[in-house]
Length: 352
Ligand SMILES: *Cc1c(COP(=O)(O)O)cnc(C)c1O
Ligand code: SF4
Image (cartoon, rainbow, N blue to C red):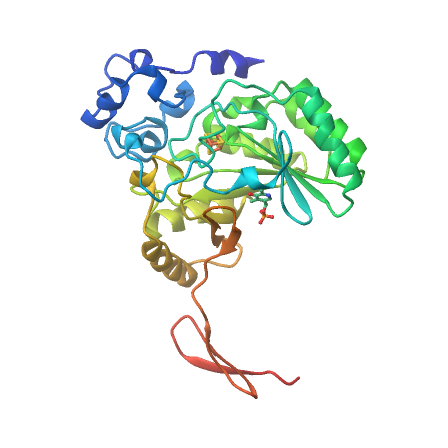
């Protein structure tokens, strides 16, 4: 249980930060606000150790709050994905026909400043109660169209391994063929959480996929790759969902390096997400036009294996849609005119 000790020693206030660490004016201004106005702050020492001295360091932007979090845009939403519209039990969201998402806990080892579920995370509610788990399991048992369950939150790996095992057993009982996914940032922010006990427990619930969130090549360290290796070597596949973040990874060069390195570490880049319209995150978002340009460039540089799907969760509950520029230039009676990445036209017939 080394990870618990490490978690307990995390920085939780400006006073906790190391003596020599100089906060920027905007970070300082955030910390002077009354406690009641702030959202949860916590950074494990390991993750903080990756931060550079520069104010615009990618690790720092993701983990240290800034005064801009108090700027709320009129179009920003407290529930940007409209998840409350699709809650079918206290902690279960059924948005897409064949898969459900369970909010295992509201706590995280590191509270990402860009978190899209800020209205839920870090509110000290803790792990779902057994009643909530059972209510979700009963729903799944009578909805045979559900073939996948995503454990999310918060970070499900904040739970003790034994409690997580109980949850998984109850869900497995409800749906014998369920495919599990666990959304977690632990390999990135607290890799010691991926210990032998956890890995051998999760191995028992195959098919189970780990969905993690590496956003910058600096996060791919010996420690974090050690964590993902422990999953993969045990037969647990690891996929990655990157969030497009201003000054963190909003260039083709940074993302090319990130996706290449992930694949070399046997991690499949799955999604690149356009920032959700979560309240107080406008300083971290990237204009959609910039996202399109980056993807256009990446398509020329990266293999299909290395290139994730660029997607956005439509504000207010529309769900996920891929953001692809159109390669269809014209549709005629006889067929389709399609453009290649250089703009050259090719013909594909309708009639086969
Ligand atoms: C993202 C998401 C899923 C999973 O979608 P995939 O495209 O299959 O990765 C499922 N449920 C909810 C509510 C989601 O937000
Ligand atoms: S790990 Fe996920 S749920 Fe937790 S703060 Fe980061 S983005 Fe939000």
